[in-house]
Image (cartoon, rainbow, N blue to C red; front, side):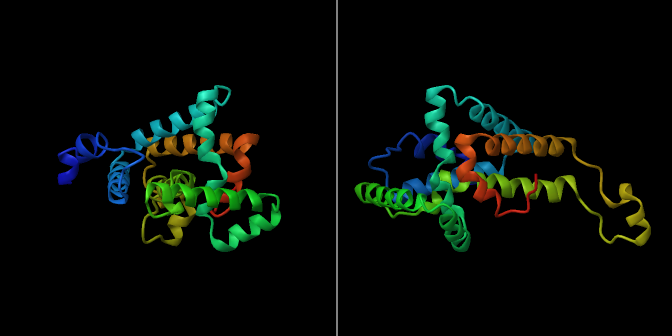
Amino acid sequence: MILEVSQYLENYLWPNFDAETASYEHVMSMILMVNEKGRELTIAEKTNYLVFMINAFQSLEDEIVMETVLRLASLRSWHSLSYGHFQMELCLNPDLIKKWKRMIKKESDDAKKLGVHLDPLSSLEANLLRNLIEEFLEVLDHKVFTQKNPVSEDDERNASSIFDQVDDASILYCERFMEFLIDLLSQLSTRMYHCPATGSYPLSF
């Protein structure tokens, strides 16, 4: 809280950040501060973030946008898969094994050049979709379908008494998330690597 009030990220971490020389502690401090800001977002702000992502992934015809956005839908997203799921995907896509090994080698070489510890799971590419899905499921469970407890047999016959009043802002957020996910999985350039990630969660289309 104190660091947030003093704008530690805006006044110190970000102005003094250099991708070539930044220490591991500096980078982790930035990650933690950004994560904290993310937790403080209102549901309306989270919806606006999703709309921005939707617009970005719908603008892949722009070379600058495509170069930046497609990094978020790359093979690196598979770092978030469980070991068993990852092995299964490689068995189903053996042509990706060499590509994966080259990617791992490049990540390792880049980390050595920067003198930092390699932690693939901390990358934006590995965390973006996973975090968005987990956030969506949390909103769905706690904001949209907020079940009263306990529930009687009479309540079960009356759906309106099972759930509290639904939050319209949360419903809008869920609608935008589904729009984002459908766009992501319907485009050839983005669905190949993100389909496995969605398969790890109880989502159906």
